[in-house]
Amino acid sequence: MIHILYFASLRDIAGKTEETLDPNDAATVRELADFIGKTSPQLGEMIHGKKVMVSVNQDVANLDTPVRDGDEVAFLPPFSGGA
Amino acid sequence: MIHILYFASLRDIAGKTEETLDPNDAATVRELADFIGKTSPQLGEMIHGKKVMVSVNQDVANLDTPVRDGDEVAFLPPFSGGA
Amino acid sequence: MSSVMESKVRIQREDFSVSEEIEAIKKTSRNIGGIVTFLGTGRELSKGENITQLNFEHYPKMAEKKLEEIRVQAIADYKIIDMSIIHRIGEIDIGENIVLIVAAGEHRAEAFKACEWAIAELKRITPIWKRETTSKGEVWVQDTP
Amino acid sequence: MSSVMESKVRIQREDFSVSEEIEAIKKTSRNIGGIVTFLGTGRELSKGENITQLNFEHYPKMAEKKLEEIRVQAIADYKIIDMSIIHRIGEIDIGENIVLIVAAGEHRAEAFKACEWAIAELKRITPIWKRETTSKGEVWVQDTP
Image 1 (cartoon, rainbow over the protein chains, first blue to last red):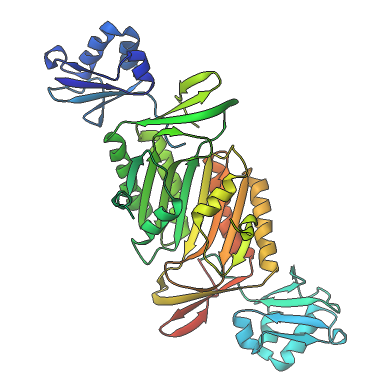
Image 2 (image 1 turned 135 degrees about the vertical axis):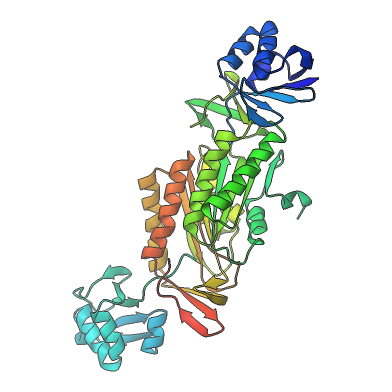
């Protein structure tokens, strides 16, 4: 399974903290965004429109980055750490 | 009396920490330097050559600054505070 | 000193002691002459709103990895002796410590540069998010100056 | 906290606590968001010589006056909220604290600038002198980088 994480404001938009996806349903981050867009059109648009950052296994990724069974994909809104 | 202070390396050169001078013997820092030069030619030269800073009553002064009874005149080698 | 103190980059709920972090970094070398620290604290005012509380969240593992990247690059690029970076998460009140960067160098110039670069880089690349609570409710901060 | 802690510029023989000085300055305002500190410490190496001890001397009254001038000008010129400056005198061992400047601002940019300016200005105008003890003897330092 592909493990998907939502942080901060994206968690409020997605209405969940995490979910899992069958790796047969998405081979890239782009396809994964299509899948997410089915249940949350707003989130799908934000990912496609590059309003959020994506990481795969804690490394910064892009829409073309492949996703595989066991991967951890996270959607990251603009950072605001550091006081 | 005029109160004269020597700090750091100047104390080693003058061979003393402080001394007093009759105000009738010097009306300016320049004349005070002449007086000091009689007992310590090296120190007199350093003051005239502006190798050391002079203060009168804790304010930065110069060779023309007048000195009066009750004044505190200090000779200050280059500063080296601040680690 | 607890074992937690031994790590030079940390994300933690509990407060930290600036003095203890400085003493820890001093142990790296007897040739440290200048230590510059940046301490970020909770401000009451943000864009005209009165803040009553802050809440920080991070992406575990990735955030720590980014802090360590910043530390390593700061040491290499600015020729400093060592750096430590600590960021708190969870609920933080006004006036409380949020983030600390300690940059230790032989001289002060490189320590100032490294410290200022590190906090800017932290804000840029580290997956940490701030939520502000005001009288109007709670909001995730999407941009910081 | 002792009454000595209440003064924002001090020259003293005893060590200071960075954490305590930061907590003292935090009390100035609930709007402090960035605190930059510079801590100068005793380095072992100076121009290739191994230092065994440092000794600082100051011109009482004039030195304190200069530190207060620096503090007031830093607050005015850099629009920071507050600053404290502490310098130790007497015998100081390698690794020990010598000087601390704390610059507290609403944001970090002005605090960095004020802190860096203040330590440079301290070295330039404050009547404090350093004597280094090496295997070759004791020498008053006449120039510092």
